[in-house]
Image (tube, rainbow, N blue to C red):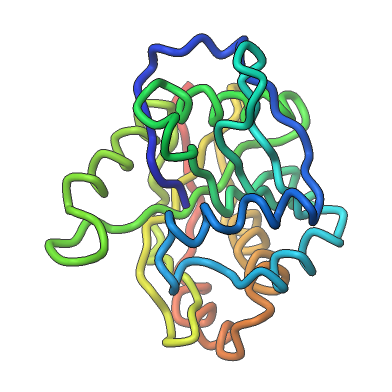
Length: 221
């Protein structure tokens, strides 16, 4: 999930990403509460627990010229299938609409270049009503697609305390990835449900609602 994307005006070589700790999470969490709806975000203690594991990381984006943090991302590493799961990504409000969203996403894609098949991304399905305008939701989809992400064909649902919340699941393939087998997709989603969403009691019921409908996905070179 991502909020507040920007233009392409910024040079990516100004951005560096650093791994954060629980102290950094305290600084970031206030921004997370502002940017993401309650059904989409985890509470502080759950995120702190996830960060104690080797495969869940808070990444801080810093503008080297300004010497300050401009955004953040939470990344889940699925080592068994060599893929990343982008859990959250946002740019701080005063740095929005300056190209930082594109720069940060590209930096994340480069972060494990040559080591992963690609990045899974949850994206809201545009709706006429909701916390954001439909145009903002469409703009986010265009952002990811412009960067090369492909919408997967499954009827994905985000597990929440209220049940399954329908969302698009995208995949940003690495340059040499031509196919994503259904077993890889199933494993990635099951891993995310087991680890990231361990706070949702009915997560297995949500998973079962679409798990067996997953199919192979192919990407053009």
